[in-house]
Length: 479
Ligand code: ADP
Ligand code: ZN
Ligand code: MG
Image (cartoon, rainbow, N blue to C red; front, side):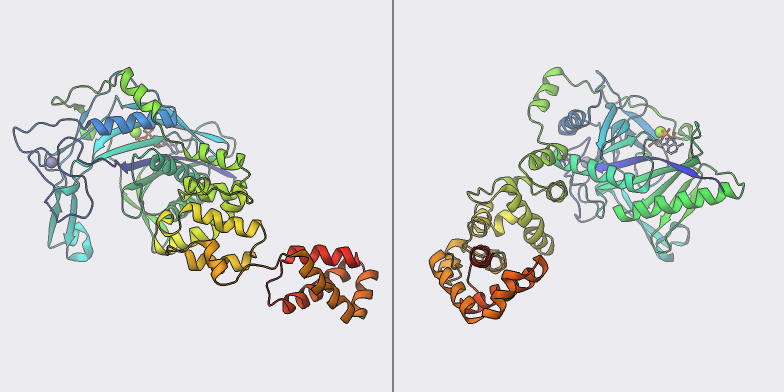
């Protein structure tokens, strides 16, 4: 059996976060009553003419800055002709030979993935097949909803630079973060505003040529993207081992049985009879437009991560926080005794858990300034980490202020050195055997006895003693 290497290229379709459709002024919204967001343009009625949405071009220019794309002086729209009721015009306006963006790249965990092109196109309508298990062949009749027809899409086509399912997921995660950060799309894979098709081939390790690729569709989560690619790599490797040939085809991922199965042999581009769209002028972004976009580009995920790491936040925490879009929240929590790393620790723990569970905006539930105050209370030794968790539960989602909760409930730790010294001294006097053992013991014995002394001191103070200070006092006396 040979050793195979996978070669993967991904095609992403994302719906643009514009207010209106790509060529008309119908609202671009999800979930409206069927066929209410329609007009003569997106229904393709005779005599109507498309007008390009300027905002869509602006979003494409932002993507150009973010992913280092070339922006040709002119790009053109093309008609992709096909007959299917989801597109009432019998063609889809897309870009073919001349996309708005070409030759970009994205850094993914230290490797560069090339991006061949990104182009604008309109989405199609949605057909629903009634009866026969929802499949067109056995359906009694079909319903069509044109609300999505004409919604702006951007197709982003990577080069075949990806080598594993894990890297494919990392690429999509990073790209999705970029798209979200620049406001291009809300990129919800589960809701269909981001769809990913994977092109997969395998070749013998070290071979110069690529193998025949198979395109896999219908993955609706990052997890299924990874599973589908893994499965396809195995399927193709087994075929090659058995001396079979891979045929170029489109395969459908089946989430339930975890396999792919053939759908149809892919249409060649000649089947679509592409030709330049005569009703639209070329897209020709000006230098002014590009400069304006460059000047207003938000901070990208990679930059956010570096900024957090420079503030002392561990790499893994920075990754989690940026992905959860909590960078600003984290850095706007001002602290005096605590550090940003302390804040980050709370954000990736308690805050993120709440945000996920409640689908909440943390700034509304616990303004960053108040989180900072809570973290400071721990850092300055006023309360323990365990007490702070209780306070967190009390202030989250209320207008309570951490410092006041601590005061009102008498939660503050005893950090008075004189007071605690007396407590420790009394315990030492009352337990001569343990004290001698501590003096004579090695690190391990001391570790155990330390628990005993601290426990006694906590008991004496109702659990309020500052643990750090107790350890220091014990060491002063018996160390
Ligand atoms: P098509 O003509 O089928 O559209 P393209 O060459 O335009 O094919 O590539 C489409 C996608 O497939 C791109 O993402 C590209 O990176 C990827 N791709 C191309 N060749 C291969 C290959 N041999 N193995 C895996 N992916 C590939
Ligand atoms: Zn319309
Ligand atoms: Mg192609």
